[in-house]
Length: 229
Figure 1 (cartoon, rainbow, N blue to C red):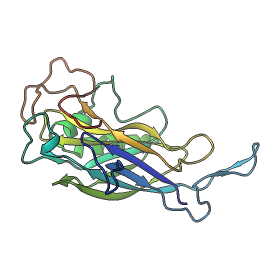
Figure 2 (figure 1 turned 60 degrees about the vertical axis):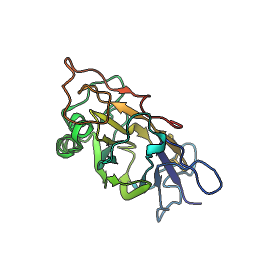
Figure 3 (figure 1 turned 30 degrees about the vertical axis):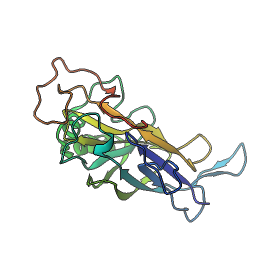
């Protein structure tokens, strides 16, 4: 069996035909040529690690007016998913921290240029490996796919996509490590939670709100998202 990773954003139940919950964001790793798990140990004293591995990222969105506690926006969508692979302990964003200008731009307007620049700077200094992007989604259910490479120098990944329209809400993962110390993750499933970037006021699905002054820290947001978070 090839290694797989699944990450999911779930405000609403996302069930298959048998009533089993599906994951709205998924990553799958095709088997590398030299090692089906992307990494192996030949002995406890002399670990032999495979070359950088590639993962397939599937971003699936499920959003429904039937499960919205606020008026459902007719233009509801997820913007371009963007992030990067990076070294352990240096995520692109984290709960309790302040949003960078790049994170703020994605969370408020879905603009990825600043964050791409921040990622490029990290890549230049060696703390990040490569940028990861996948198309946004309009109309649900929907999904997009992309591939990314990861290695032992940059075994973690951070991703973000704006919940649009909104003041500064987003979904994503922060510093998710795909290396367990001995091998690359074979199977993983995570439901993504909505976050507030702490940069703009507002509690409705709307744009062009007043700035939050002083800037607040990034925090997980429960309401107005409902279903099975």
